[in-house]
Length: 51
Image 1 (cartoon, rainbow, N blue to C red):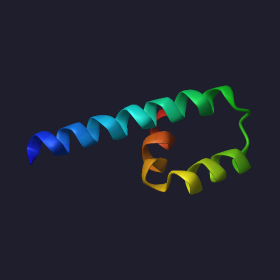
Image 2: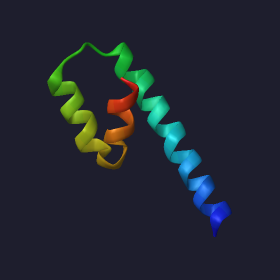
Image 3: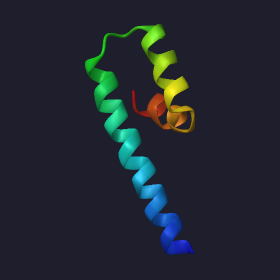
Image 4: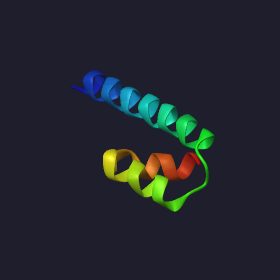
C-alpha cells in the first residue's frame, strides 16, 4: 500500500513538474493559469508553488 502510494505521488509530482515547465513557457496571463488549474485542479497547488 505504501509503495503504491509512493508511486502515485511520484507520478503526480512528475506531472506537476511537467505542467510547470509548460506554464513557464506560456505568457504570464491569469487566464492561462486559471484554465490550467481548471484542467488539473488537484495539481494546482504544485503548479503555484513551482511557478
